[in-house]
Length: 306
Image (cartoon, rainbow, N blue to C red; front, side, top):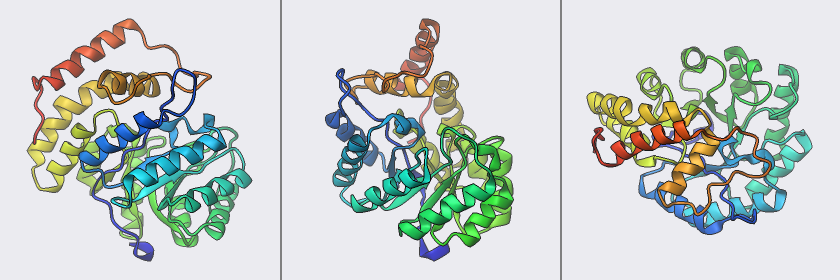
């Protein structure tokens, strides 16, 4: 691996931003989630990604979220933090704060608004590498997701000193992941994303780590662990009977469903998204069907390999 960066095996979940009814950070819910993820064998834990609604989090609250995560994890596993903002200047400042507060890695995508070309994207990553020493995970999402071609990703890997990982989940990510794997070989670790979709196909290509959601850590973890210990049939069975059935409904409105599911499971006190809520409400029909399949999984009427 580039620069001797560690190779991850397992799930690398990204936390949501939990809030009180008044809109303040709900630290107690954050702590419950961190403990839940650590108890399910997380290989690393992240914050301030898309599932965290990072573009709506204030600078003060960013620091609270990062400090809470770093302190609770206590060095047991690496912590990675998204630093992307609308400007390079603010992205660099976010990265400096993350480094100061004890984060181990940065997760960097293109800004969520405003499309930029590959030249500007390259300069964006290169500038970050000059300002902050933390390893960079390149995430091919944001308004410029279509710019992250395999050739461009290879250029970032080869020419930006601290790029050590790539998280692929942009357009046609299954095919693009395979192309990048073939081209990059062992220069960087490629990490799966997209909330668990295509996990079996990506495991078949050789991926060993996935940035999952936090809503069902035991299921994500069971699939990955089974595959990595050679139990292919067990991994496939759990994926297609326990993970995929709820993901199909979950991904109709992932941020809202994430918090809804976590509240139903007792991990968070409030299911509200950060204001303003940019998603459409989940219909009663979808919620009813979602709860039906989730209940069958919880009652082990759908198999979960141990």
